[in-house]
Image (cartoon, rainbow over all chains, first blue to last red):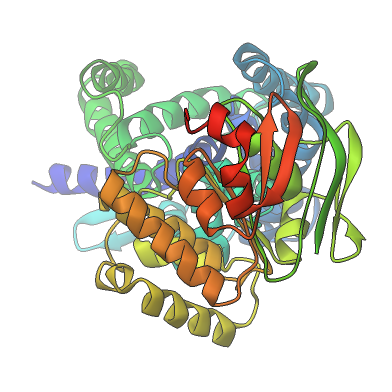
Length: 285
Length: 234
């Protein structure tokens, strides 16, 4: 019983982080039908920002969150304006290799600057602390991270479904030609999707850095998990990414308890089953 | 008000319009008729800025808008209601209408225009919370036009509004267009329904394979040899 509850709690906490990582990938795909292979590298940038600010400046890693989100936003916008905007005119394959190239560029730039050394955040208000609630013990940084992810999701959801800007973003994702006729700057909307995507995933990275090691190649695993999450939730669906993130978190934590070496395999088994039996995902159009 | 002067448009090197010229005066309804592929829609898309002319000029209220971006053109009061309607299917009727007012910053104005559109199309008011894609073809056309009216356009361009509608609804549609004309909207209509369009229009242009071949008052044009032979099969 204790173990079950403990696992469920951990699964949900991790799931919320996965959900926030997947949010941007899903949003960018929804708005412009592009798969961003560099998504995990955006996250890695957020992790390094948290690591650097808390290690070389007298800042608590928590204070790095807004910096990571801001840097992610800029990275998203700049990637769109300098690269994505141009490759959109090319064939599908060019778009695929374009974001793939961006991934390699960011990953090996990080390798050059930081070396492949594995690093971790050693100090911080929440780092290494445990919260005990009755007989359940949970990592304080995971609880906090999950809370921030929930809040970030709420903000993005509100922005997309309750504001004029969000309505324009949805219109662009449904029919960008018609959106243009409404006077919507659709290129601006694409850039905004990349900005939000970059900000949310970098924020997730800065949270993750509280309890996960930082290396230049850390993005690889999380990009794959995000792909599985988005496929399960349905490409382009915000609610789908949220639910699927939690499902993936639960699958990973529960299967990890029994066959630890295979915990990621179970995620890909789910991914495979979804692609075969319900290719549009749980909430896809 | 709108003056299109010798515009040429190419699609990947293939000419779609050769030096097409026409104009629309304030308060006027002008119809552009012609067979499929004559370049009628291309002319409207050149005005709204989604295709770029290789030469020629488009002047609106004294301002050259030939190479402006679409949002800027919409902000000057030109609205394009596209062929095959392009409703935002998953969004509600009201969300579709509000998107039509995207370039309007004043909430008060948006509410007034929404009220106006609902008066004009009570059916849309009844269904304001329904998803656009659940409407019938005729209702979707109403929604597309209503969405276009949300900024009270100075120039309303309708691209083949009767396409895919059954005959009864086509009559209804032309009644609506007549009503808009009476309300004082300046309208530029592109149609394959040559007879109805020219009967209603103040003036008309006949477009054939990317050229303006004929121009005249709507009813006179309808009686002209070229229209009778080419479109009415008389």
